[in-house]
Amino acid sequence: MVKPVIEVRELTAAYGDSVILERVSFEVARGEIFVILGGSGCGKSTLMKHLIGLYPPAAGAILIDGGDLNATSGAARAAILKKFGVMYQSGALFGSLTLEENVLLPMEEFTHLPAEARRLVARMKLSLVGLERFCGHFPSEVSGGMQKRAAIARAMALDPEVLFLDEPSAGLDPVTSAGLDELILSLNKNLGVTFVIVSHELASIYAVADRVIMLDQKSRGILAAGAPKDLRDHSSNPAVRAFFHRKPPEGAG
Image (tube, rainbow, N blue to C red):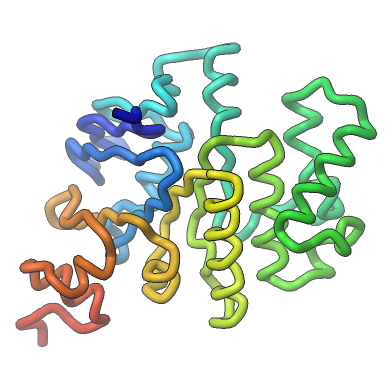
């Protein structure tokens, strides 16, 4: 049996006395496109921040390729961090740096490659996301969709096994969003990258997701899990059906 690349075991996430998620468990298979979804305030962003190590769990454990990010420090923690890359919702590119310089940053921090080799890798990553002609452009000189692509290139700089994407389609028009979906599918198919994506964009979810979990604010846990079209067509839970059919919950005024 293939070991999952991510294991979340009985995770409780809290800010002080406010518990957001309670005893949440799931796994992400290697090579999977896995989407975290749910209504506003359900804990999607909180879960993502815990998965990438920005916040420690109040209880439980998160394993990345078998390593517990929150139980390690120093070189062991750095080794786990290099196993994944992150694209934040806004792209979070440094505006004073060109796209190429943004992609160079992780390599300058975490590798000992010569400068010319780093530049070659940065250009290759930008080429993978269709931005080979924009290496010298600043973020303000390219579109929002191109900024997202550049952020994905930067997240790929260290050849991670897993890419975390926070609302990749947010703020994009439908055509640009569809192009980003195609890029995710291509990177997954051709490079074997595992994706963990926070999203509420149904068109994108149907286009890319192998499997989803739907978080629920009331229960502070997972309301449903499975293939998105199966949940849409066959779930017995009215809240799940309402979400996937973009309708108010049954009985709502």
